[in-house]
Image: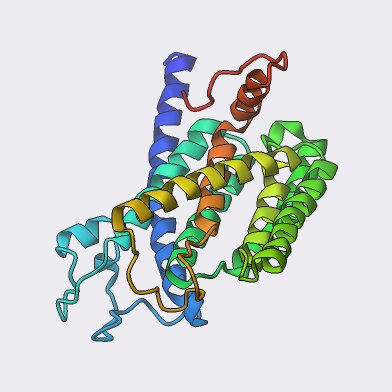
Length: 293
């Protein structure tokens, strides 16, 4: 068998494996999304229906497939199973495929898959509970710095950041900018700012992706947040009763999901984004081909 054919077969197998692994990780993320805000163990007990309390058998816990085969209802009591469950599983699977497609067979690939899983977890917890779990961000900051240290001595590992100083400045800059903005908002507007969870999230992204990423992520997150916020206000004019647990006063949308989405975009297209921005500023720099195309 020609070498090219063997490599193509291996890549196809690893892409499928990435999809399956991502869906399985997504199933575990659903457990974390439900339990972490309630301060429950993510290990024990086994998953169960929140209404009837019956344990979910393994054959009813197959990612996406079980949700479809059960008709989105509990086998025992008929309680509706929300769309979030297959969505998280599918999104995680697709993003794992994208990570493999972007980075290939290098040690950085499983690390960035874990980062993607953490960002998905942060997004759904923040949307549901208005909080960002420290279980992801606090260990994520030193792990990102450690990856940069590895990349510094072993560039072939595939990490985007090859300088530990870059990661340290990224973490400090990411956390520092949002911390300063939060304090400025409180001082000038006399209302709650973004929250310290966002500070730790951007610090983690800065550690993994370097100091240059911080400015791009803030710009993209702000743009996405503005577009979505204005759209919601135009569609609904009044967004209705405040979500339980949301800050009082005004229409508040958690900023964490926008930071997470911007971080994902930078993970896949960061070099292209920087080059495009430099080109926009008429700074001579070659615009690289988008890595996922």
